[in-house]
Structure formats: structure tokens, C-alpha cells
Amino acid sequence: MYKIKDIPKISSRKPDTHKGDYGRVLVLAGSIGMTGAACLCSTASLRAGAGIVTLGIPESLYGIVASQLTCVMTRPLPETQVKTLSDLGRQDILDFSQRFDVIAIGPGLSQYPETKRLVLWLLQSLDIPIVLDADGINALADSPKILDQIKRHIILTPHPGEMARLVGVSTIEVQSRRLEISRMFVKGRRNVTLVLKGYRTIVMNEEQFYLNETGNPGMATAGVGDVLTGIIAALSGQQYTPFKAAQLGVYLHGLAGDLAAQEVGQISLIATDILDSLPKAFLACEEGL
Image (cartoon, rainbow, N blue to C red; front, top):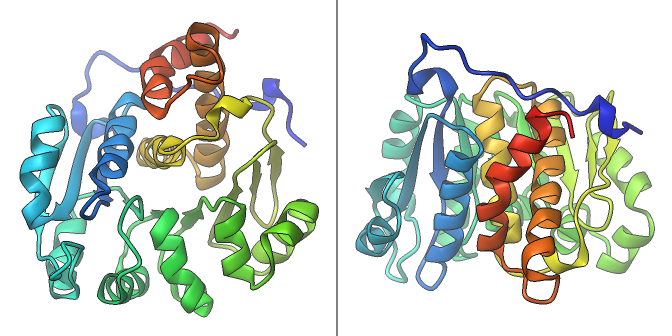
């Protein structure tokens, strides 16, 4: 287990730099009724220091997210009849992804069959690091062997229910055997880092293990996981190793939740409170608190 003193230090910024030096993040997220997940993830990436964030969204939802996101760029993409990302956009996404350092896939994508096919094709075709969450993980659960075909590194961020679908057991079993199931999942998968969310979130790869101690029960609310995905993607784009990006991301996410709870209490805590507290969490880490 890693202690707080072992959390990676936040890299300081040099005066002679520009936005491209701090990571270009592509986010594929959102569907009808789930634009909030896309906005939370994208904004969290900026708050976590990414230099450039672009959100790929079903084309008819472009106006909704563009009105909410003033600092995030948007990329309208082909959509299905139910306003989810369409398989027709696969080559556009693949070509466009070459401009980025990391891609986050999953928040609010939906489990529409055509969208799931798109996700599975992208997982086998993308040549940049991936952070996979939510409906991206649900798509992978249909074909878990695709993990062995990932070209670069992938960070998966399942909650216990998503983890249960990935490994084919019940959520109760996942919760009762969190460490054992995590070890079994990463064994033999050198390009995989697992973030099993929940009380004492686990970050694990084949060689390293971290048990997080920040966070509180108020964070058990919709959208909080989308924020974490954005944070980890941003740190990955800033050249942290996959394990360190996940470890620092989980720690900062929980710390921001703790700081937010001090302001609004645990009962009233919502995902945007964590976003608002991220700057304080980064400052606390920079000051060594």
C-alpha cells in the first residue's frame, strides 16, 4: 500500500511553455439525456491542468454542450437515430484522435448497440492511451478479450457494478473480494491499469498497488465518476505514467470531495462541488499539505 507521502508530486509549470505542452485530451461522451456527463468529464480535464480539451459529441447535441462549455472545444460527430454516437463516425474519430495525447471514452455514451460496436472498434484501432469509463466499460464487458488487442495503455475506472460485468460475477462478490478480483483482472495484462472505485478506491497494475484514503460518502452521487475520468485523462496527457496518473487522480478527486464536504456537507454534495474544489485540492498538494 502507498501512503500519502508517496503520491506523485504535481509538476510545476515553466515560464516558456504553451498549452500544447500540457496535454491534448479528446473526450468521447454524451447521448440524449446524458450531456451532463460529457460536460463534467471535459471540464474536469481542464481543471486538472490539460492544455486543450475537445469533446466529441453526437451532432444534434452540439448546441446543448457548446452553450455550457466556454473553454472546451467541441467536435460534432455522426449520430444514430436515438442521438448516440454512430458507427459511421469511426474513421473520422480515428483520424482526429491522432492530434491528441490521450482519449477518454464512456461517460454518458449509452448502451445502444451501434454505439457499443463503435467503442469496441475504437479500442482495437486507437493508437493513443485510453481512459475507459461507464458505458465504455459496459461495451467492453461484451468482449473482454479485446483488452489484449489494445495498442497502447488503457486505464479502466469501473464502479463495482461495472467491474462485476467485466469479470462475470455479482456486485456483492466484487465488494467482498475487491483486492483479489483486482489482482486477477490485471494479471498478465501489462498494458492495463485498473481503478476500482468505491470506499478505499483501488489503483492497481501488474506491479503496483495503491489504496486511496481520501474521499467521503457524500461523493456517492451522479456525475462524480465522470469528474474522475476527466482528471485522470488530463494527468495522463501531462506525461504522468498511467499508474501515477490514476493514483494522483484518485487522490486529488477524493481530496476535492473532502474539501467540498467541508463547505456544503456530505448530504448536499454534488459533482459540480467537486469540480469547484479541484483548484483547492491542487493547491494543497503543491503546498505539501
